[in-house]
Image (cartoon, rainbow, N blue to C red; front, side, top):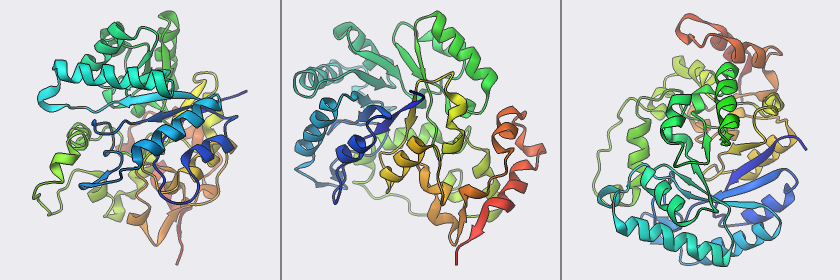
Length: 341
């Protein structure tokens, strides 16, 4: 069968529904992960755009989830916000989690939950032993020791993305998971910076997005994030130094991961991403497959996926990752960076 994929639900407003995309590629899709309304997750709130509420969002979400489940595809609920504010240790949060899971089990079905909070993981373990509890990639669990600390709370882990190209580390984590009856996952199309200094700040900000965007905020450019960094062309080589894996190279991971996670919740073209990875090939701007993509920041240039050198995967998966003393990615950028107009 080869590798299958876990894809993120998106509330598509016009044209083909997300369920239609999933059904088109259902032979290669193992799971759909999705948020719930009115509770923070690792992305912005579903159906709420700066206070403008899509009142049909709940109905559409449930309709699509039922269709996806009927097609034989698993469902994974996202309760993966990094912060729940004053409710973080509360019985209120516990009751909310319990009520959502009870409702989904009765209506659409539910196979697993992805969590960031140990409190939420504990609540699910205690009340729903039949539900798989998965540790979010944003927990940055990239060592055996880190996974050992929370082994009682989680059945599986999406490993820290910074080690996606480190097969020695992957083998170590996979071995421990197999010996301890745990699952191991990987996210392969993140557009985020490796070892980003402001990731935790950003994750917490997203958790409180509804509050943040309802107040007056600083509008000046603040450095330290990827959007600021890539405005300067001299930093574009860093894009090649991150954690993403090209569709053409996914097959190299088949001995380690039966299911690979694709970020598709906010990308403007989720179908393009799913098609590229399911087919194992892509012709076009590689940035279009990432979340976030940063495509607009590089215009009028694109990163042409067809121009990567034959030794790209071998070189980047075996190097010492000391990017400050290596020029390979900078030289490769010269080959793949194409001016469109």
